[in-house]
Amino acid sequence: MKHVNMASVDLNLLKTFLAIWELRSLTAAADRLHLSQPAVSHALRRLREIFDDPLFVRTSIEMVPTEAAARLHGPIDHALGVIHDALQQHSNFDPSAATRTFYLSMSDVAEQYVLPVLMEKLTCLAPHVRIEIRQMPIADLGAAMRGGEVDIGFGYLPGLSDECVSSMLMEDEFVCMLREEHPFGGNELTVADLNALQYIYAETDATGHNLAEAALRRAGVRRNVTLKLPHFTAAPHVVLRTDLALIIPRTVAQAMNRNRTFKLMPLPIEMPSIDVGVYTHKRFASDPGIAWISSLLCGLIERDTQLNPG
Image 1 (cartoon, one colour):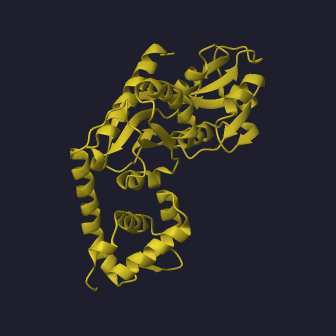
Image 2 (image 1 turned 90 degrees about the vertical axis):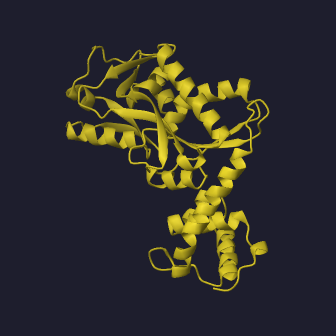
Image 3 (image 1 turned 180 degrees about the horizontal axis):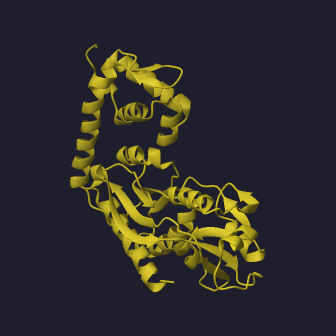
C-alpha cells in the first residue's frame, strides 16, 4: 500500500468505506447513505486510488473485502467515532434555535401514533428542527444507527444490536378494529368470528406485525382479505366507511379512536406482547441533540399513554 496523502481523504469517503464494509453491496450502501449508486462507485474508485488497493472485490454474491480493507476497517471505524465524540463534547443543543434534521426509523403503523404528538410539540419547542423517517428492515437498522444514518429507532425491535440502548415505554397488544356501526353485535370475538370477518391486510416489515400474523395462523384463523395494501396509512379510513376489519396495535387504535368511531375488540387467542421502546446507539451517547429528542419522545409517549390508557 502506497503512502497516503491525507489531503486526498475526506470523512464522506470513509463513511462510504464503512457502509460498503457493513452491507457488502454498492446498491445497499447507496440506499443507506442516500446517494446514487454512481456516486458510491465513484467514491470507491477514489478510495482505491488513495489506498492503492481494490479494497472490495465483486463476486456473484457480494462485495468481498480484501486484506487491506480488513486492516483498515478497525482504525477507520474507531477514528470516525473519536471525531464524532470530540465534536459533540464541544457542542450545545438549543432546541429553540436548532436547525438540525433528525432521522428516525419506525414502521408506518407507528408513524400514525408517534408523529402527530411529536410534530405538535416540536412546533412549540423546536420550530426549525426537521424530522425525516427512514424505514428499513430490523436486520439493517443497527448498522444504520451505528453509522449515523438513523438517530433513533422506535417500536418493537427485538434482536437489535447490543450497541443500541433502549428506553422501554410500554407493553402493547393487538386488537381487532371495526367501525362503530359494524353489524357484529357481540362483546367478544371468537375464532369463528375472526374467520367470518372480511379484512384489510397492510403489508409491513414491522416485527410485531409479522409475529401477530404467525399467531393468527397457529390459532387456525384464516382471514378473508378483501383489500390488500402496500402500506398502513389508508387502512383505518377504509375501516371507518366499510365493514372490513383491521388487526392493529391497541395504542395506535386508541389514538385513532378519540371520537369513539371504532370498536376495539380484544382477540380471543394468545398473541405476542409488543415491548415498545426508543432506541439510540452507544456511539452517539454524547450527542446532546439525540439525547434531547429521545427524552422528548419518551416523555410524550408516556404522557399520551397515561392520558389515554384504554
